[in-house]
Length: 115
Length: 114
Image (cartoon, rainbow over the protein chains, first blue to last red):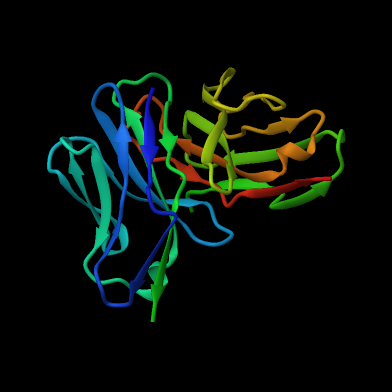
């Protein structure tokens, strides 16, 4: 079975400061990892993914994430937060070669950027 | 513009009255899926479809039906809705056969079952 944990329900960061949203995962084999963002009254938007290769993945809106196999983590980061980054963020995992779908989402983390 | 379109966006209805939420995508994606989002639970998959006439249960299929008669459409059917199906529903699609591809989501349908 696969699972995702986002240990923080909410993260508060001052505008201009670096931000981190944490994600840990559990799969039997190798993972495909994704981050999505959800703005109010909208669907989830894809930010970035890790499939293989370089552990540091760069995505949309200046976000990046670091894959750490030994710690089974895939934390989302941004060097300088913007107020417009305030949203709900979801981490998701799928085991590579893991059948027809098997995408599991975390419970989400509310990111609040304070001016 | 590439998009997944859901209708209606909002619906308030009563227990037992059959309803259908439509989903359509214009990206020629083979794979489509339905999720429900509930506070503190994240997204949970209801049903998915790998292609036309191929559907399968997700994690929470009870009380729901789906069909995939055309590639672009994947309606979600609640034959006898109950209050515990009050939720925010999302349809998603992606290229089939490549499980490392991200899913594209619709803007959601908020259902309230009284």
